[in-house]
Image 1 (cartoon, rainbow, N blue to C red):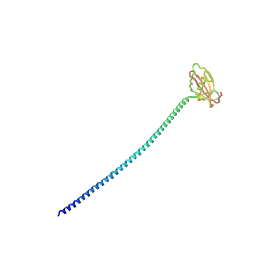
Image 2: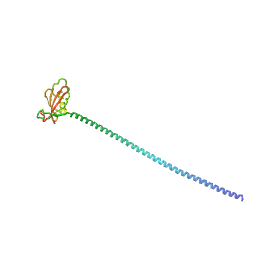
Image 3: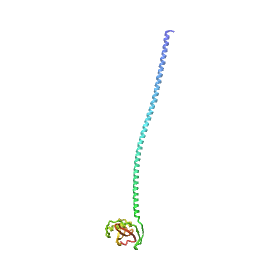
Image 4: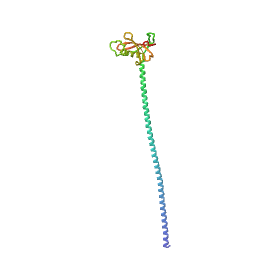
Amino acid sequence: MSESENNSRFNKFEKRRKNTKAISIFLIVGAFLLILLLGIWFFGGGNNETANDSTADDEGNSSDFLITEEDEAESNEDSENNSTKNDATTDEESTEDNEGNEEENDSQENEEEDNTETEAAEPSDDNVAEAYTGNWEPVGTEQEGPHTLNFDNGSKDRIEIKKAASMATGIDENDMVEWWVENNGAQKAIATVSDSVETEVYRVFLSWIDNEGWQPTKVEILIENDKK
């Protein structure tokens, strides 16, 4: 074989080897680019999803925050309303308690006033519809020393007799009309009284107790006002 033929074969082999090497390099580069693109697509997409999830979480947190603020405002409003209701309830209960205490006190006072034991008595004349005696106490007095009867208007006897008659009959002193006050013996008196509209007319018998005042001893309900 000639040297020229050997060179020709060597050149063909060398050229083929170079072509194979170039193809291999292209294949490697292409594979690398393909892997790079796949990686960018995969990891890039994941980041977008993560970002989207993060955005959704932020929106959710924002929404939760708004709801929390609204709930807190409603809770505060409910608390204020409940506080107002509780205060109103407390005020109502306090008012009811006060009213109850006042009613109880009034009831006790009425019981004390109505604690008088009475029993039927003999009428003094035919003008008496009903007569009774009671365990009334003396009304007290500002008078000192020996007592001298004085039935003049505005005298201490008249003032204290009116108070004693009010206690025995139940007529308020401010609504009482004194028709007559007279002597009934030693340190004794009779007062004829009624309310302002003369619903009932009473004759009250009283005795003076030294240092204690006038004490009612008998009450008569009159058929008609014989001192008018």
